[in-house]
Image (cartoon, rainbow, N blue to C red; front, side, top):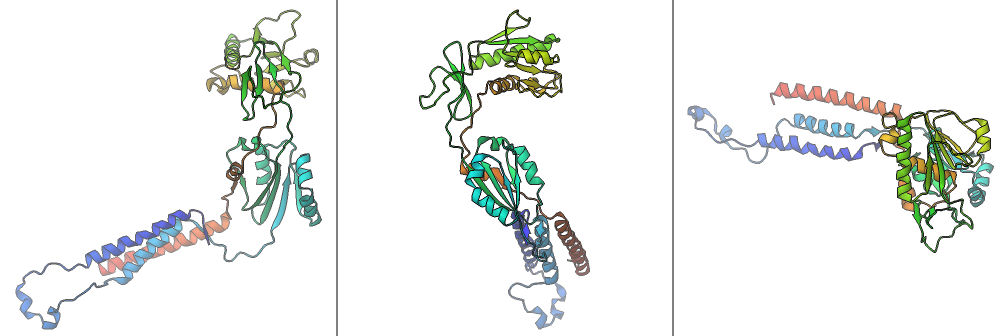
Length: 385
C-alpha cells in the first residue's frame, strides 16, 4: 500500500482526544450527603478504586473513526491484487552525434533486445521532450533518456517522468570561439559563459573570440509603421535597448536612399522581391501571422502598443527585440551544462497513479467510514453517552 499524501497520516494521533475525554468523564464526583444513604447495603457503599473503562465499544468506535479518516485523507493506493506485468523499456534519444557516439553500445544492445528506441529532435526542446514523455504509457514503463546536458533543458520548471526512469547525459566539451558584435565605442557585445548578454571593452582574457565580428559599426534601423503609437512604442523600446547595451542604433522613420538597413521593423507585408534584395536584413513584422522559410523574418500577430500587447504592457518588449537581434547575428553559443543537482531537481517523478484503482479504494473507505459513523451514533444514543 502506498499513500499519495502520507504526511496526513499524522492525523491518526487524534485518537488521543476521545481517550482523554473518556477518562475525564470517568472522574469520581464529590460525595453529597443524602438521607436515603442508610438504606444502601454495605456492599454498594464500597468505593471503587482505579480507573474504570465504561462504554469501551463506543470508545473503540470513535478511535477507529479518527484513524480511518486519517487514512482516507492520505489517499491510499492498494496494489496487493495487481498482476505482475512485464516492464517495457523505452529509450528516448536526442540524435546528436555526441549522444549517439557516447551511448552507441547501450543503444545497440537495446535494439538487439527489441526494445523501443525513439529519436527526438536534434535540437532538444524541453516542451517537445515533455510531450514525447507524456505519449508513453505511464504504467509498467522504464524510461531511459539520452540527451546533451545543456541549459536549454531548464527552460521549464520541471519535467515529469515515470517512476522507473534513468537519465543518460553527455557534455559538449568542444570549445568554440565566441561570435560578437564590434560596437563603435570599442566595446564588444557577446554572450558570456553564464548565458548573459554583456557589452564591454575589456572582456575576460580567458574567453576566445572569432577572428572577425559578425557585424561591426552602427546598426541601421528603419521603422515603417502606419500607426504613430506603435512607431513611438518601438522607438522607445529600441532606445532602452541601446542605452543598456551601448548599441549604436541609427533609427530612421523615413527610408533613406542608398542605405542598406540591418533591421527593418514594420506592420506591412514583406514581398519576395524585398527579401531577395535584403538577404542579410532582419525583418520584424507585427500584425501578421504569416510564416516564412527565410530565417531573417520574424512575425508576431500582436499590435505592439501598450493597449494591445502583453510584451509592451509587461515591459518585455526591449528584451524580446534584443533576443531577435542577437539570434539574427548568431551570438548564441552552447552555454555551460547543468549541474547534477540541477538535473536531479529538473526531472521529477510523475505523481500520476492508476486513477480507477485509486477511486475504487477511496469509495470503499468512504462507505466504511459512513457505516462506522452510523454505528457510533446509534451506540451513543442507545447508551446516552
